[in-house]
Image 1 (tube, rainbow, N blue to C red):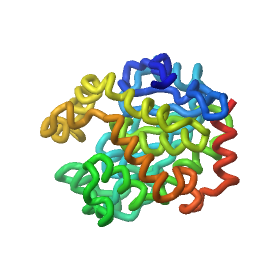
Image 2 (tube, one colour):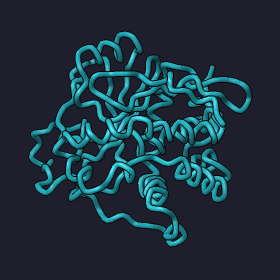
Image 3 (cartoon, rainbow, N blue to C red):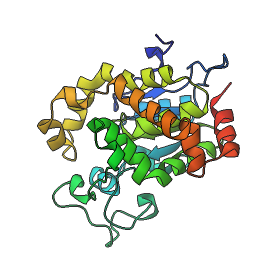
Length: 278
């Protein structure tokens, strides 16, 4: 079906879902470049060896964190936060309470930033579902929600990737499959990667879902969610991303059309494409 291969996995001690978006074919016969954009689950438990590989070998220079403010505060500072050569940017894709748009602009002991007593999910605002999306499966509704309720942050994350300069960027959330999956799908679409390859990359997370769920279950931040839902409910399905891409095609003429509508136009798309392409 596709040319997507699992040799793009980056095996680290502290993550289970890290891979390079390089090496994917494009519609004009090219390939995406390795070492430009990585995707990953939470980076809180990276080992010293992991950091050396990411920073010294791969050249990581930017972290795009899609988690909520509460998730970041509850998990605490990850080991990459102490490195002056690695820039951290924060763009939540979930509607949340509070006014901090970038948690990295404030310190964890800021009295205005309160940790949610009942868990990070309590920091979220109720999700709104557009009437024409109410019949969609839950995962599709969630992904459309990122685009509908946090479209400005989706665009901001892609803009940060575009402007990153030399070195690699890593996009991550908690599991590295949903929020990360939507941002990476749009980036790959801009690079000219065909839909079937975007879907295949998204679905790769299913290969390591048991280890991923076990890792998240070991964190007090995510343990309850992992325990109340079975592994199957956490497993990404190809048809989910297929449906999202199909709806973008129907409503906007494709991901590029959605981006243009939301202020990320042809010039910026060309710059992102140049960063990702050979």
